[in-house]
Length: 449
Image (cartoon, rainbow, N blue to C red):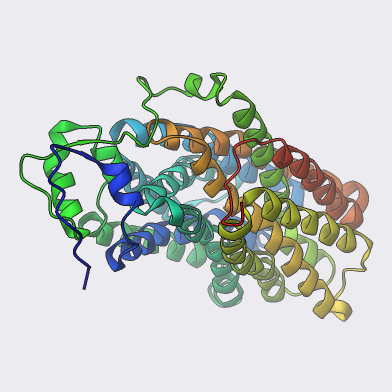
């Protein structure tokens, strides 16, 4: 049962202060779970092509570089979708932008089995990328605005950690479906599941209360939502969000005003380098393993290992951020990626050493994904409500440029220097991420400060 809080009898209710000072209720946890579920399928659909790649190479009799356009197109779509989705969320609402994104990437993923060649597959992945990119900034904004401020890093990280969780699911489903039913069945399943979820969330998922506070015509919805959270609100109550700095016009230009310029640039650089490293990993790990002699099913499980450690690492990172702050926590995790990728660069990748190979993939991919996911909590902390989705969306969009380059960089490294150059490039990229994160001023403070 949701606890009841004292009546809010002020003429104007500060929604931000009301949420920040209230307990984290069971209903809020349900909303976080509902929001996070959309990102599980975002991560799943984002990595289906990587899991299917060895099968596609064999069936279409094409070399690894032939699929770079399709992989790159998906990243371009996500880059554009991240920017547009963030702006749409700030202007029209996080809920409608999130559910629209889920429907878009679900439909277009379900159409992928119709592709008969790389050209058609490239177009479909480009269009699916719009939805895949638009979902994340709105999910992060929703998660941060449902809960008290003290729980914000944990709530956002629990949402974003579903990206590697979905990637792990792609590896697990791929490892079972691909040898039995082929790549078309894999994409069909990946498209149907998010469509079913979106249909279920139409009634369950409400709009952000902080977003509703800005729109007097939607205050009846806000009154109902606050009552659902356990607050007593009069029918004539008015609302404001004075705990957040007001921004008159939602625009990416607001992110470069003096108060935010340094953090915006450093955060964008962090996203760029980190996503370049993450997507170099998830794009080519199955191909690296099949090239080293692993069978298709085992190589798909390698993708699971690369992602699954990120689930544990991100949750642990969120807990540590609340205690020690984001600066120390994220820099230590980033240094761990640099070290892990460096070790992989010196290892012999072969089935004979599969235990050590998978352990190091889990360590390196886990910490890499953990850094990526906790970046969303950091971005949500850096920006106020009025530009939060735009700020997160812009940083992610810049990061997607790194994602766009990752198929080409990874393919070049593997073709010219094999796995040593490939993992060495990931290590060097994360060293740059370390520098960028260290440059951010507005880090999340910990309890010990």
